[in-house]
View 1 (cartoon, helix red, strand yellow):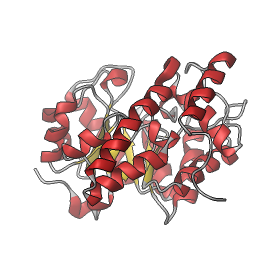
View 2 (tube, rainbow, N blue to C red; view 1 turned 90 degrees about the horizontal axis):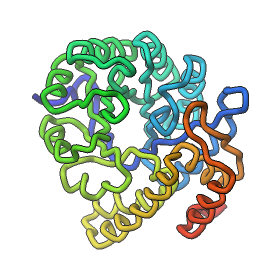
View 3 (cartoon, rainbow, N blue to C red; view 1 turned 120 degrees about the vertical axis):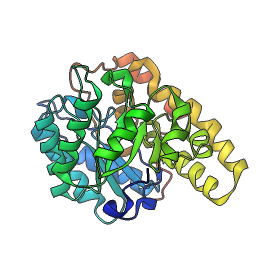
View 4 (cartoon, rainbow, N blue to C red; view 1 turned 90 degrees about the vertical axis):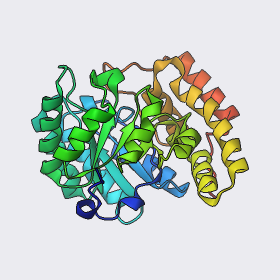
Length: 309
């Protein structure tokens, strides 16, 4: 079945490096607006093509409605006319996800994305209904978020075909499931398929994917942008060289099982703005672990901007 390109406009614009950025919080749980703006501006200055906000790294699934609305507002203000913004609106309830979808639309985000219903395992019909209601709430291009490790639902190709028939806003997906081989099936369905693994951008592009959404591209945007642009230019040697670099970058971001905090520490050092710690109960770094992260990030050249100020 063909993608809903007519309804969603130019789907070819959805490609490239879309960092899944962290969300900085103040001690009282409110969004640290200055730090969040600094994160977005840092990545824009290094040439990223868009953002995936309030996702897993962004702690979106455990935000309250006010926090999601604030993220939507700031994202829309910073990205407007500069880069594309896909806001993740997944939440424990359909109503909360719908509120976030409307906030994303009203704030000027270009698209929304959503995990399947979380906490309670759902059948296909419930997943489809959830997606219909969330997508209709914004009526923007819609990206499914396949993250079975956390949602208990693997959007395999047969289910994706059902979603595609039932949700006309469906434009693509972020594929973060272990089953990499299915990426090509989604591409053959006409969907814009982002890989959700920072180690697999070049293999995904070779499979017909259109880019990457993950935390490591935010930590090292220049590496991923150069890789993607080299691929587009047919410069396979450069693309392969940058691909090799993504392994160590991704390993660093995943170190200690605290990716959200790791990238906050890296961004904080690079931008000079404290990005805080994750919301409970997301695991956080101890002081000695922070020192390890910063030392390794310095070795990889991630603590200084590559753009002249």
